[in-house]
Image (tube, rainbow, N blue to C red; front, top):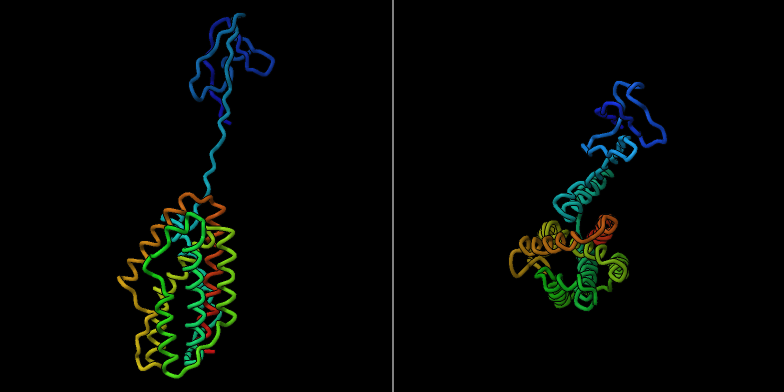
Length: 268
């Protein structure tokens, strides 16, 4: 703690506030704390009382990566880290999709998207209402695609474990935590807009003679629709505590892993 010299008044003593005094004869200058320039108080007995102010140092919390731009940017950093870890596990190599595996992938995705729609449409939580009818919904398009496959003579399978496990988890987390669920909500749609379209095109060229599925079509610009959802999520997150934001970031990692399990069905 820094000490400041007190100006001395002739023939008076300075009470340092510790139960004893010093006179002019003792010191040329008496150490006293006067950092904020508070005036000295002259007591009835002629002593000068010097108030000591101890100012606590303010410690600022270090920001999370992307925090200044909103929760979606924070999630992007998490996704980048997870993607790097996945790449370090080994090269992706070549992959050959199959009709059977692709049907499992579509069926499991339909279950997940239907679950998302039902939660935001039926839930009583006020935060979910802002995420209804975003234009990103995929359930109807997937139903049309699966019907097309059925008419081609393919047997439509029941949902497999990756899809049922993720749908069940979404229902559970939606009841417990809106921030956690909305993190999954955004990440699922982001992954589909940003990556699934590329995968769908590759699969179509390999096994479907280039057919464009409804799963990859939107009424409007998909990036713009996703941007609207991103803005809403960032606005909601401004009212979340740091604990809730951290929980959201942990859920981003879970969303990545659940979605990766469903994606692997294409080559099963």
